[in-house]
Length: 325
Image 1 (cartoon, rainbow, N blue to C red):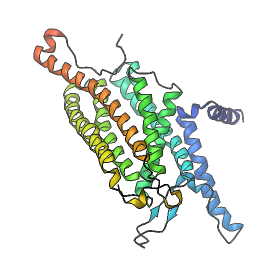
Image 2 (cartoon, helix red, strand yellow; image 1 turned 180 degrees about the vertical axis):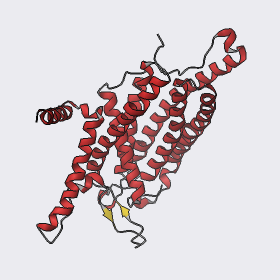
Image 3 (cartoon, rainbow, N blue to C red; image 1 turned 90 degrees about the vertical axis):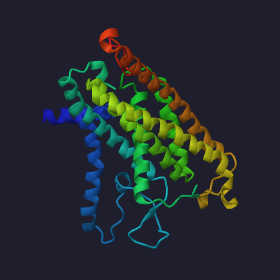
């Protein structure tokens, strides 16, 4: 009995203090609650009434607001945005907290101990497009939940700040600004393009950092070269193409779209052009800052090859990392 009370007390304490963000056991219990309530509703409600009402817990688990498909095909559903999307995002903020901390505690930390990684390294214009396919809506909202969770982690100081902490906070704020507005005003197609331009180079950035910490020199260099190419193409060339498109092609939209009519999913008054342009431009400025760090690492690598590490002791290092001492 005492163990049960202790279990309940620690869980409730984690909820009150926000520790569920870093305690995967508590975030997992939070994830289970809507699932249990939803299943209970599905299986027990038929014993009470013959007309089965929709589960009030379903919006937490599944995307909401279906809309008639323009193809009239039952296998080709469409969804619109709505207030219940906030519940879906909230649930998946908890989901990403659970996934993140589970991987850190049960995968990253054991690997870090095995490879003797220092502790400081371990803690680190189709418009309006309002009829979304379910895959796009799910992807968009899960991404939104992920960035919300990451911002919470940074604001609560759950990780040791890196040298580029201010840039990271600014990046998360601008990203959420762009996500929120693009979703609200039915610009999910351009938002999806921005997602792709960020996520693909981020994959190689994370791989490069991991290999650097594990001191896998050859693999690190190969992945870093791929990162340099993908970052240049996706985060700069494609982002500049998007900026040019917004600046030059915004006025090419039909006149029927250039008005404020939320009931029709149309929001493109003249100033909305800059509401789209400015956050993408700010992201580009932040990307240029990080690009300078990447080029600095590349420069050091070339210099180290020229003079050889054996003579000078020069090493290629993550320029964002904490000091080694």
